Length: 117
Picture 1 (cartoon, one colour):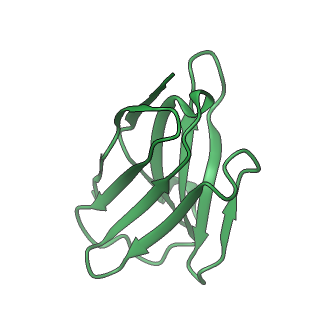
Picture 2 (cartoon, rainbow, N blue to C red):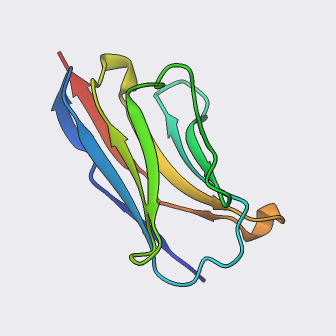
């Protein structure tokens, strides 16, 4: 079973930046897309950014121009670069790798991002 290990979360002031990392412990196989999600207290989990196997990116409107998703194949790692952080970006962030069959998807354990004023 492949483990997705997240890191990089923490406390940052509004306007600041953070980079989240998500490293896979093994071969993630033939996937459809990678994604970063977040869940704020009392809210549903939402897709923040995605990157297809073909290289197409998609961003939620709330983070466009501020967040960038990327991957490093050599390091088996995906990233979420977050800039100009806002209070409303505070949430637990999860990485995921999606396959044709959802039961084969991999999820990270989540990392807390807290933006303070």
